[in-house]
Length: 251
Image 1 (tube, rainbow, N blue to C red):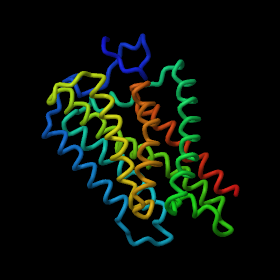
Image 2: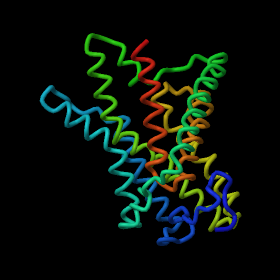
Image 3: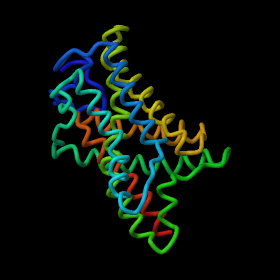
């Protein structure tokens, strides 16, 4: 494949789905519907406050944790059908070292950018991480959060990758940019969108969600670009959250 992005392996013959009408065509209007459906799931998972009692708390937690994943897969499947699962390719063994390096860079960037942004504005902590330090049931809360994070963070990957693929399609097919240029702008814009969608989580701190969360997301999407698999970006995301929450828990 010519016109390869610098993150991709030189010998890689695989490509991203849907942006170039392969394995099937998804139009601009259809991408709009897919993103709108996912946004409904995002709103439900972020702002829906169900009536919870001790008998159904685990069921409700499982439902809310899976909301973005359900709407992400479901919305894409309306137009992509079984080709939706081209996102879930197996990670190649030779890519794991690259993913490890991305995780290290992600952690370094997160701590550095948080420190710099903290010089200018008070940064907010992730509520999930803060809750682990409170009360005698902290360990149980931590473990429950790590389990619920599996479907939740896999759903958050759709929050980054659906905009990435939609923007890549738009600039490559509709604007006529080169593949490399389209990937670069899709990587940047989808990462910023991912950050902005975290505004409610981080108390509407614009600087934090743009420079820490948004630009930090570049490493997660870079993992997808490298592996062509949502499992690659999910692995970075899950390990990053687990390690940072673990530091808070131990502290």
